[in-house]
Image (cartoon, rainbow, N blue to C red; front, top):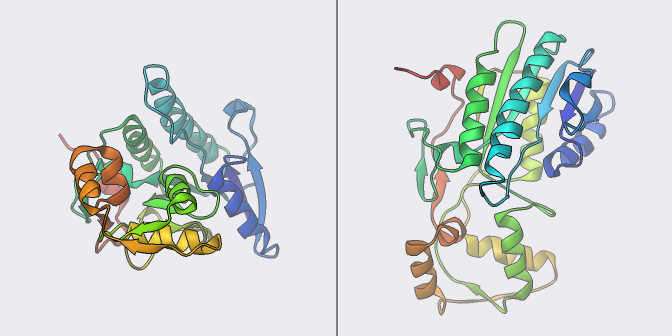
Length: 271
């Protein structure tokens, strides 16, 4: 039986992962910890693996919130990883994000440069680099760089799409491609890493990118609604994509392509 710590009580991913692992009581024992508690007071001893899902995300970046991104997503994450290693935990799984690339549109491949443009993306990349440096023969570091997570109860851009699916009488018949990961697929990926720990950077995602239109229609169907498609809004959508970040995030093209696992060494900063 693998003893797993989930670091991030009441988080969306943490709650879903806890439910998934508890469904296999012969394979996993699970303990969930809140990182609102001072890290030095937490006890990681006896755990085989720790999964860090706690993070500051979906907050408007202001003068007041900017320090939180580094403090929570980087400094606290690194402190948790160091404590885990010191107290004998064998594997540390870090939830990261496509935001480390700093792209709202385009194709992300194994050769795409890391160039975060938000405080969230920068804090995630800094955490990746510092935690990857802790990896050795006794401490396996696994980084999951996910695209947008979707599923009932998800936050961020998915919540905005839910609002559209509830209100719109039509679906915008607009072609685009977005790489996504369903919460079930993400939990599958984490469970697989727990079963067979591997050091490196991994990219959990659905087999094929989807159009925002299809996602809105699926959400509507799950709520008993059927939306008719229309191209009426397409000129306005093109303007939104060209002029706003929200438009790019909602209807632009952003996909992972030909991405396999990457070694942690790609995070080494070169002069």
